[in-house]
Length: 298
Image: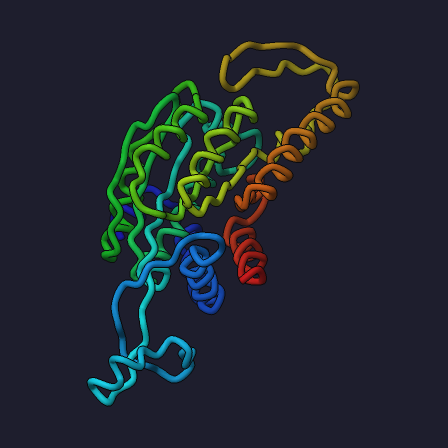
């Protein structure tokens, strides 16, 4: 736990542990949903045989094998084998922002990624880590061993969100890099051109990856809690402008809703899970709510 404790606060570690205890059935359902998802419109390839177990569909029994062995075996398909997950983390400068929350957007995303990594490793599913700003910066190959949890966190602990950003280019690089169907879990504030980002997300989906987009904003970016004349700084360009917050609020919130609404609509149409979060939400509760929603679809 040394690498974990060196980065995550004790309360976050406790939240991840509680998440595991409170949500075992959800975690199982989440993973079963991920394992089952290749059936939805994708080809399913025969892999190997395994012994028939109560609850298996009798239609999957291989009667030729039964005739030879006098034992029941079912065909095991590719979709039943371990699923590979990639945690894809935005390292751009804007991810280091917080207005009044203890966690920056980057800290919050690390907590989410840690919980998902913990779940996958405990389900013996391999999980890897990719980080990016204007391009992919680091890539930790997927592994299912328990120590992978510490490997992922120790790598993240040494990173700081300081770079410029090109989400679309980075995700296009990722699509070219991944050779097998995987679960791609992206953590970003998505401060870039939505049209370009969606094109790169379409590319991932076209290659049959299951894509989950965690759109994480700071509480202040969602509620705009400012009054009077305030100086605002663009988190990417660092350009500063002065505005009357009271007059600007309605326009800002309208633009934000349009921004999120575009992702909401286009992700839904393309079969991408779009998860809207902000740093005021308790991350384990928010993740549980997402797991419940996801499980209901499978």
